[in-house]
Length: 176
Image 1 (cartoon, rainbow, N blue to C red):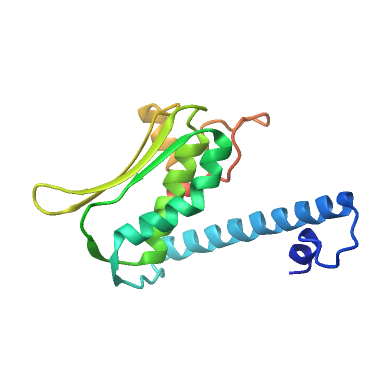
Image 2 (spheres, helix red, strand yellow; image 1 turned 90 degrees about the vertical axis):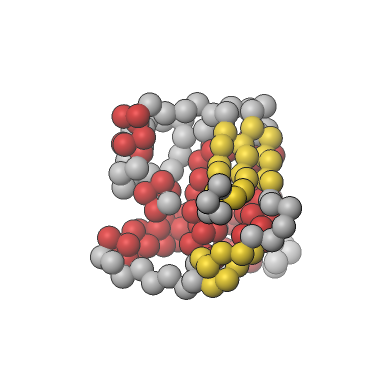
């Protein structure tokens, strides 16, 4: 909390350099907390202890929330983000927190691995049998079948070199 207050210069008397340091501390703390939460989620899943809080939810509302949360990342990456919700409400019995987490992981990865000027799309439709079909597509760098197997393993990344281009812990797709 203190780092956030300092990063926002709530005392009002910090130099620009001090504010920058506080912002770095706050960002690092937020990243560490997210990593710890991902590891805890993975542990719960692997131990069969993850409890789902299923509710009747209009998935279009989750789409809108996800769009708001990744829009700035897409803008900064200069990636065209398109979110298409169904024309009529599509209510499903889901855990809204987990569905949001899944969609955010997929969208974040798609944005991260899609070159500038290309697109990422989130859409939803009904299959012929009435099932809800959710799709995240992109025009990114893609993966081979072998790389997909590797990327789905906990803590694995396609590029594990010290000078790798993309950041991350290798947990997003595993959790998804």
